[in-house]
Each structure stands twice: as structure tokens, then as C-alpha cells.
Length: 117
Length: 117
Image 1 (cartoon, chains in turn red, purple):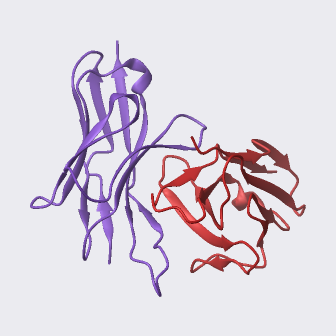
Image 2: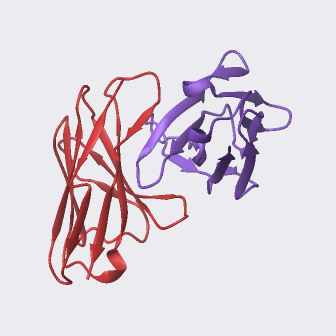
């Protein structure tokens, strides 16, 4: 089946530093990838939708200058949390939708636990 | 607006007993409905989906869900629960897209399933 990987799985950083999270679709091409944030015991909140070769579309309330998204290829999207602060600590999950798929299924990565000290 | 509701925060079941995780939805037009499962500190795994066709949908790990249009429900079921089924379950509806594009996933708040030996 379709596999989405994320790296790193866990990261701890100091306040003020930037952190990059990679999301890869391993066995399919993904024109569209999604970045979600999940707080403890809460549902997933869509942060942004990234389309290969174009600018990401951010959801209301998500700072595009703080959460930089790049989708340079059909198998890779990156999320960079710039000047991270403790309130950015969260579980970040990416998702990918297979290009040209009629199945309407999104596949999710295993998530990245970010802790900002 | 499209929405999905999971009325139970937690469901407790004894191993070997049948389980039901409830979900109701509100959509305009034909719904695209999904169930995902999330194990602790992991990403989401796709279980099953309803797009069209038979109201009873069979998915991974022995789970199934029944689409009921009159009751606007899409309850997740399994005839015999396993301890390993303990996880967080999300009912998801796909939002209507715009301009021919596919819509975004809208997540329920999640239901924690606990299966005791």
C-alpha cells in the first residue's frame, strides 16, 4: 500500500531556532500534500495544503512566514518551523494524496513530535 | 458546511465482544466518508471509506462500517474486539472542493477505544 514517511520522528530544539520536517511519499507520486497539527488528545487541524511546484495554501490563522512549506518534487514536501517557540511544540503530521488517484484516499505519515525548550 | 460528529470520547469493550464507534455527519450532496485509526504517538492509518455503492463497507483489520443515509450515520464496527484494537479512531468527511479540486478532510474529534482482556 501507499507509504508516507516523515523525518525526523522526534526533535527537541531551543527557542528561536528553526526546524525542518520532511515528508516523503515512498511508492507513489503526490501532487498534493497536507500538513496537520495535532494537540494532545485532540483532533487534527489542517495547517496548509501544498501543491508540487506552486505556493502552499494556508488555513486561516496559520502564519505562512512562520511555517514555511516547500513542495519541490512529487515525492517530497518540507515544513520548516522558523524561530520556534514553546507554543509551537506539537505533533506534526503530513499527508499525501496520490496524483491522478480516483480513490480519494489520503495517506498519512507517522508524525513528528516537536518539543521547543 | 460539512461536519462530522463523534458523540463518544471513549468506548470501553471487553476483548471478544463486538464494538461500535459512532459517527454522524452533515454534508450537502453525496458524502465521502472515511475512518482512520491512530495508535499512540503514531500517524493515522486508513481503515476504510465510503464513496458510493454498497452501504456496508469492509476495511482493514476486520473493521467495517455501515453508511446509513436516513440517519446520516457511518458507525464503525467489528464483530470481535482485540486488545490490539485499542487506539484513537477518527471519522472523517471530505469537504466539497472548489473549482473542480477535491475538498479537504474534516476530522471528527476522535473516539478512544479501550479493549480490556
